[in-house]
Each structure stands twice: as C-alpha cells, then as structure tokens.
Image (cartoon, rainbow, N blue to C red):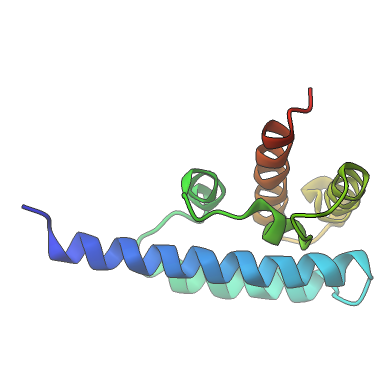
Length: 131
C-alpha cells in the first residue's frame, strides 16, 4: 500500500522542481544579458535554503534529482528553446559556467545553479550524441 504522505511530498517536490527550472531559465537569460546581478541570485538561494532546509531536505541533492525527473527540461535550465542550435547551446553553457562558477563569481550560492547548468548540459549533450 502506498503511503499517502509520501505521494503528497513527491508531488510537492515535482512542483517545486518545475518552478525552479522555470525561474532558472529566466535567470539564465538575465545573467547572459547582464541584467541579473549575482547578489540577487545569492539572495534567492538563501531564501530557498531556508525554506527547503526547514523541511529537512538537502539542497545539494536538487541537481541530481532534476536530472532523474522524467519531467526535467534541460533547455529550461539554460533558458533556451529545444530548437536552439548546437552552437547556441554550447555558447550559453560556456557563458553561464563562466558567470556562475563558485570560484570566479565570488557570490555565495552560485554553486547550486552551477551544478544545475552542468546537469542540464550533460543531458543535452547525451541527447544530441555529442562526445
């Protein structure tokens, strides 16, 4: 017999991950256009850590979960359409890595988004058969 609480929690996590993908896609666009400041991103991560941490959930597990979700859309994470060319995908990935790299950004919290971008690119890479 399935635990009803577990089912509700699973659906809640799925909704949260979907919303997170949408928001990261918007932020990806803004980061590349230099409209979003990294301290704004850091503030968002802090709020997420507080709210999710209160549930006893480890934020570090989100990128792995997102990569395993059947509804995971790596293109949303990169802020691109599925029709984006290989070159557009690679350029966006490179630009986001440069902006979000924890050692280069100097902004706490970018590591989580850095990991999400890497997970998204890896899925696209495999899906498109790149080496």
